[in-house]
Image (cartoon, rainbow, N blue to C red; front, side, top):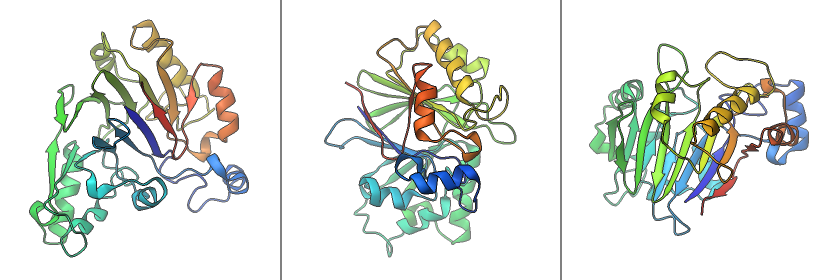
Length: 282
């Protein structure tokens, strides 16, 4: 399995779209891994990329296609965490209509919660379309109920992302490998922890929006909350020394630029995502 981060920022990006704060100016000056686009990831079954699952659909998706050779024309499965625009830029799906794209009968299956479904249906209604016009099919997820997305097995879990909509985090399996993809969320609900008993993960990706801020509650985590989550996963036997734990989904308000975050995360045995970063799971 190959896991690739395409974008790794929170909603405003880093540097922020309209921001000139100290953290954003430092990112502009330093460049490289300090430049973060809105969060998105892709999982490939192997090097052939025949099996593909894309996670989230932010406004930067087209840029990710150009930068990282993301081939949405070959993607059949799109997994959405929640309906916020930085994770589901639904208007872009209009461009799957036949006069915009040569689809060759190719269907894109979208998986998400009720709010994602309503947002998708709203886009169709706005443009007087049907799902057949875009060759796009929506599938409603249920918490803690596994489903097949092509070669992948996906299980939605409850996140802590606040009302009115609950974000879904996901267990994603392919062959003998399992990934826990967990953003946007604060510390996980007990119902989710109960479900995780007996599960094992090769890679865990954790929301770290708050960076070095000492925030123990809310709809996002920071470095300390990620470390607390990692410790509990380890105690439960969900991860071991061979598992990769990666922090992800960063806001400039969380302060730590890439190199500083690498140093801080390493103290807890965690790694740091960056745009285009690839984690291969043998």
